[in-house]
Image (cartoon, rainbow, N blue to C red; front, top):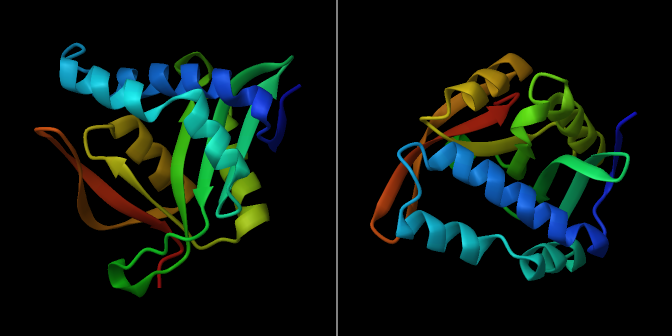
Length: 166
């Protein structure tokens, strides 16, 4: 049976590994370039996750089964969406290891987030990630517009999605 709980310091290493795996699977569709490698290895570190766990402005919930991390959701409580004056809480990251897609983990994590942060959730998702965009649409997120995720010389179109927009 899966358990969703708040992340603890001991989760930092597993959160790092899962994040690198999911991020590369999503963005490295043409292989792993030096730019992608630098971005993922500089962003997802145990220290990064420890800082998030310790920061009162974030909520980090993990889905575990027999002490194995299957997915997580990171909420930024101080990042209101300015698009269409939506406001709300940002779903900074929702990652589920690919082996566990289709088992309701993402939905359970979103349900848990709503129970802890309210229904006015928003997020950005890469426009090329059709699986994620379909999942969010089925959950009830609406597309509010476009933004960019940029690093080094890379630029990725992201869609701005919001649950129950005004």
